[in-house]
Every structure is written in structure tokens, then in C-alpha cells.
Amino acid sequence: MDGPAQSPRVGIVSSSENQRALLKALLERNALCVVFAKSCGEFPCMLRPDEVDVLLLDLAGEDNAEQELLDVLLAQQAVPIVFNDSPATRLSAALLNGEWGKALARKLTTLAHSGRADGKTASAPAATPAPYGEKRQRGVLPVSRDVQGGTNNVAGGRIPGATEAGRRERLSPAPQRGQVQPAARVWVLGASIGGPQALKRFLAALPRDLPACLVLAQHIGADFIGLLAQQLGAVTGLRVLSAQPGHVLTHGEVVLAPVESRLLIGAGGLVRFTQLSDGGIFYKPSIDAAITEVAARYGGRCGMILFSGMGDDGVKGARTLHAQGGEVWAQDAGSCLISGMPDQARKAGVVSYSGTPEQLAARLMEHVRDARAGAQALEALG
Image (cartoon, rainbow, N blue to C red; front, side, top):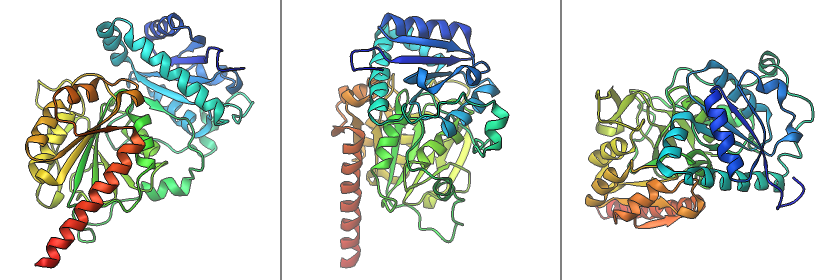
């Protein structure tokens, strides 16, 4: 990319031939240069990192090759990556009559230029990537299969300065029950399309000793939550883990809500799962369900932040939380890939603060530290 006026070179990877054609048409209609549109199996032998400025990975969550390709890309590639989930593309394109394609093209352009400015593309190895097996022999971390979830949104490629030791520390086993103090303050983070990129920026700006627990409900495929935990854990000092029955919510951690079960929180922050109902839940995990559960347990000692996403999931929960005196914040429209969810909450009149991911992080630090100081002062008064 010789200058800011040149169209970014986009590579599309999808297991679906129809999706490859749809995405290619959407991007070319919006003046982007699609240099290839390949299946997951074709991709490793085709890409030279100096030929593409940004990758668009379309995920259906049904192909083992997708999971393996994601391992390879996150461990080896320096090219910015955008994750998209196939059903969301079809739904968005149908509902928004092309506006989704325009928004995606704008964000791809921004990310491609950002990657060039950061030197990511220039620093990518020139050699053609090796086959899957050879990549794994070089120590690519496998994605955990014992947790539920996934990702369907934006990622920034390799994380500068991230180390395997850092990942192991951040994804280390949770302390035993008896060794931890249950969280006094819990915040729910809700996100969908564009969420992972915003969440990385948000979490990177938070200290590891944050006096709050964060529960993340990210709309995601059921095979990718381990990958999401790795991505987020690589940029933050907070502990990032998938929710498991028997875990106790504690400060300084990010707990990813399950996709195929409903999260329940018992006395003392004890995590439990229950079966999802047969109908009535369109989004998984449900942000509304997560915030309703947290609000029932923590009341005014909890809050929520809605990040980038399409639809209205989270609005019902936001109203419930607002009625109980909890804080409701949202990502500003300008920094979202898709601002539908935050906009719907703002239209409901329950959002008291909007900002970029970094501004939201700064505001959260100030809020929870003030809340902790107030609680300590009351305790001192006896």
C-alpha cells in the first residue's frame, strides 16, 4: 500500500463458497481490492504476507480447518485480522441493505492503514507459511477444547510484546476456593460484531489489580471461546478464564460466559450452569440473561458496558440494571464496527456515559476505586 489513497488489499478466507462470493462482492462494491478469496484448506499455501494488508476470516464454527488455521494465524501472522461469522454476515447484509458492507469496508481500511503505520505488515516474514503440521511443531499453542465459545469479530493480529510465559500466567488455573475473596463489585461486558477489537483496547488499559470482576458475554460460536480467551489474555494483566461451575467470582479477573449453557451466580459469587430454554434466546451467550443474573445478585454494586455489535441484546438487561441503580455505559458510535447495540441502549435512555474503549477503561477504574474507598470508609465507621 503506497499511500493513503490506495485501496487496501484484502484477503478473504471462508469455508463457504457462497460466503466468499458475497464478501468479495460487498468489499469490491465499496472500492476495496480483494486479492484472493480462498477456503481454509487453500489458504496456507497461497498467502505471502507482503501481498495483503488485512485478512477477513469468515467463520462458520463447523469446520475443524478453521480452528487450526486460527491457531496458525494468531501465532505466526503479523497482518491485521478481522473475524466475521457467516450467519451474522447474511443477517446483516439482509437487514441493512448494504450499510453493513460499507461499515465493514471502512473498518478494514482503517485497520489496514493502522497496520501499515505500526509496521505490522512490513515486519511479516517474507517466506510462504508452512503447512499446518510444521507450524504446530514450532510450538503454536493449541486452542482449548474444554471450554465453550468463540469469536466472530475483529482481532489485531499478533500482539507486540506478548510472550508465552505471559499467556500461561494470565490463563493459569484459578485459585482454590478458600484462597480467594469473593468479588464485591461485578461488571458485565456485552459485545458482538467488532467486540474483540474493542475489548482488547479496553482490557489493555486496565490494571491487573482492578477491584472488580468482569463477566464477558460476547456473541460467539461455540468452538472459539478458548481462542478468545487467549487473545484477550495476551493484552491484559487481568486473569482471563472461561466460566466453569464451582468457580468463585473474584476481583482482577475476566470471566467469559458460556455459550451453550446459562450462567447462574449463587451466594458468594459461586458460578453455576443451567440448561438454556428451548426457545426465546436468539443470541448466545445472551447479554440480557447475563446482566439480569448479575443484577439480581449484586444490585447497585454492579454495572454494565455495551460494546460494538448489531441488534438490541443487552437493552432489556440495561433497563433492569438501571432501575436497580446500577451504572450502564456504552462504547461511542465512532469507535464501533457496528454501533447498533450501544445505540439501542442510548435510545432507551439508560446510558449515563459513552466513550472509546480507553475512555471507558479510565472511567471504570475511577468508578470502582471510588466505590471501594467508600465501602472501606463505611466499614471503618463500624
